[in-house]
Length: 330
Image (cartoon, rainbow, N blue to C red; front, side, top):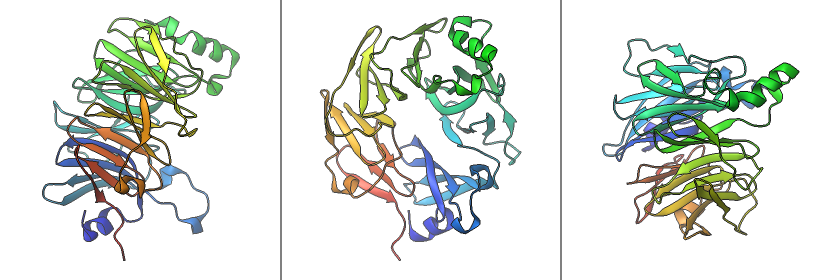
């Protein structure tokens, strides 16, 4: 991204989420940086934008709103060619609409305890996953269905019902934060204190993983295994009822994000980007990568890999790393 485009679109903002539309198009969610002189304020007070970056023609476009959102997440519907945005409280927006206001609508099935933690596309459909144990599937424009309906799946919500009776629903130490699937009938959702479930398209079943740690991200990889990033350097690998902990001695930092690219698993912490091959860990051997002091996320479409932090974006094509977004040198 050239200096003018960065200053016009990114300066004074931090990247919080990123998706790959295709090999030549990336989209970022960016939030306005707080002004220290203004004292404490909440995220909803700040401007939020999504930035569309065309790599092939080095062109940048944006759309933004003056506050009103918390932790906005983004995903792309490849079938409808739409960007879908949902924030923590279920406020949603889809592009290619006449209205530019945010939100365009709110997710159904929400109550005071429901919070959206991630959006993820699985075989053409976008899923919104959140706490306590909620998974919504987008089936068309502004239309979502609840795959965790309490009336249909009461066993999934047993602890939640009990917590509501005790009056401490807001203090639950479990619930979904991440979802992925091999297809729409083979989905895994995970969250805090080892909370992990499998959905086969009809029923939910608890997955007994060898961990009571917070599970931050689940990935269904092309090698047929499910990988789960957890706190304190924990990484789980398995499928069905066979699971193991992949041990490593490189870090005790929380593993945050996962991506599979050309037979290698990529794992982020706040400070480093790791690669895992044949169950062996190493810091990604690249000066371009190691020049960064933090990482927020990593994403791949199978043809390119993107790693990013609040102000830098790196692209890996399988041979070399390239910095494609960074603050210009004055």
